[in-house]
Every structure is written in C-alpha cells, then in structure tokens.
Amino acid sequence: MGVIRLEWDYMPPPELRGNSRAHWRVRSEVTKQFKESTEWRLREIDPDPMEKIRIKYIAHWCGKRIDPDNLIKGMKPALDALTEYGVIEDDNPDYITGIDWEYHRVKHKNEVKMIMEVSEV
View 1 (tube, rainbow, N blue to C red):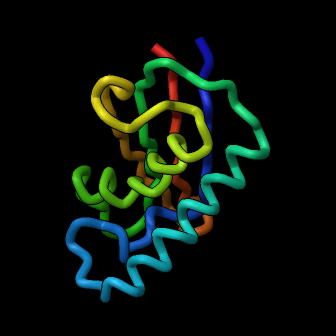
View 2 (cartoon, rainbow, N blue to C red; view 1 turned 30 degrees about the vertical axis):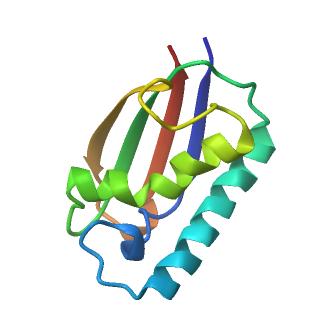
C-alpha cells in the first residue's frame, strides 16, 4: 500500500472555506489555482492509481484555527485533483473510506504548512 504526501506552505485559501463570502468569480479563480498547484505536486511524484483511499489533513497553523469542516471544504480542489490526475476513479464514498485531520500549533507564520496524506486502503 502506498502513501502520497502533498505539502503546501499555506493553509487552504480563505476564499474556499465554508464561511467565505467571496464572489463566485474570485472563488472560481482561487479554486482553479489551488487545483493546479495540487496537480503540479502530483506530477512531481507521479503516483500510481489507487483503488480506495483514506485522506488525512495535517494543519500546522499559526493564529486563528480553521474549523475542521471549513478545513475539509477548503481542501476540496486538492481532492478533486486526485480524480482529475487519475489517482482515484471518483471522490465518492466508494473510493474514499474516510477523511481525518489533525492540528499542530506553530509559533511563527513561516512555519505554517498544510499536508495532505493519501493512503491506499
């Protein structure tokens, strides 16, 4: 079983989170950019397709913590990129067995990062 580990040096963009009031055009552009950043990361490691996966989001945050539901919603473009890149066939419950998250407080903004671990089950 393989594990894919993708990392960003920022949290999911605020425009993509559940409590965002961003205009649909802004949200659309940010979604596109975040999805493309995920696809670039996937191209770098070129993972094999997986049958079923479990996802874990690991947030290293500074400042106000993002609610778990908003964190998951903000990571949706990254999850969609897994389907578009061909890692999984679809992002429905037949292919994703669960999504976990954990938070780690960091002292400085330069330590902020978001990690997405994709494990084959």
